[in-house]
Amino acid sequence: MTAAFTIRLDDQMLAKLDALASDIDRSRSWLAAKAIEDYLERNAWQIARIKDGLDDADRGEFASDEEVETVFAKYRAKPA
Image 1 (cartoon, rainbow, N blue to C red):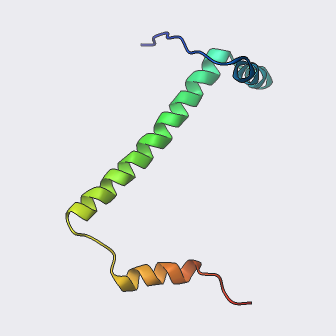
Image 2 (cartoon, one colour):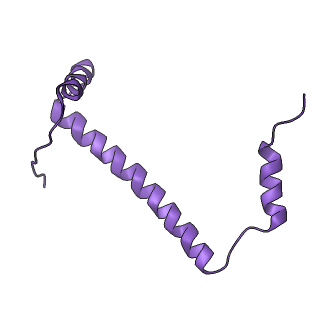
């Protein structure tokens, strides 16, 4: 099932939406729906990971000092 709703965009954003829709030969509606879908998926994933981390913290599951140092060392800039 699909439902329609109204969204307000300023003229500049609407022009960008129309240009991209034209470039990819899709409708304005399809492009907006796809953008919303992508946004929701990305943010739902991020919030789920944050909740997982908070659950770990609530259980007292933290990385040891040695584990943290190992990660830092992996990404620390190497002297030239």
